[in-house]
Amino acid sequence: MVELQTRELEYFIAVADELHFGRAAVRLSIAQPALSKAIRRIETRLGVPLFIRSSRHVELTPAGEALQEHGRHALNAVSAAVRNARRAGDTQAPLRLVLKPGGDAGLLSGLLAEYAHQPDARQVDILFSGPTDRTDFLRDGRADVGLLYAPFDDLGGLAHETLVTEDRVVIVPSDHRLARQALVRMSDLEGETLPRWKGIPGGDGTGPEVTDVIQLFHMITTSRMIGVLPRSLVELAPDGLVLIPVADAPPSRLVLAWNEQDRRPLVASFVAAALRLFRYAREERSR
Image (cartoon, rainbow, N blue to C red; front, side, top):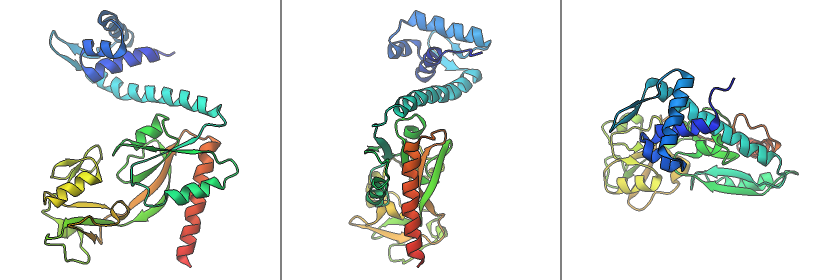
């Protein structure tokens, strides 16, 4: 038996996000009394309070926090199911590939050319994401496949194949104590200020928060921090900066990812083309 309808979950999530019944009602385009009544109905049906209310304050109970997390996933799943059902019936729909600007390691043209040889190839629409939301595009159905970086992107709930494994480089100002080194180790970076990457698990340094590589370069240029990145994200050093390989930094991987529940031929065909391309590349390098 389904205890909550999709519309009720949408009502609850709006209030949980806003923590204000008035703002949530405006967001949902309904009257505040109707929203309050709907939330009380949900709490009665579930048998637990979801919010602690006062005249000036609204906060989630532990039960509310749990429903917020899992309810959001449920709504995303429903949205993805609807999108995929519509797209499955549309034999002319383009394939949507999401990546961040500059986040293809220079491989996008070859990948698209290889896919074009597939007998069932379709038009490919390129979607550019923000710094950290590519996985959201794949989970909620806005994109079919995506180019992600592991371990920086959360691959939970996604199927994926590694295309390229690469080393990392440290970026420092040209007058930095390490600038003349041909190679450094992670121990050489002890005591240095590293950025806090917004929205990236394990990206917590001690320096200012950054959201993209351009911001990072600016911070390094002004000597506020240094940075460590996969080599393909910074092929050439901007003026005033120096790139140095980090010998013992964990490698990063460029992966092709898609929703693990998505088994459409549209996606399988693109994945097959990508694997064929990079298998040939690896064979050529090994000769």
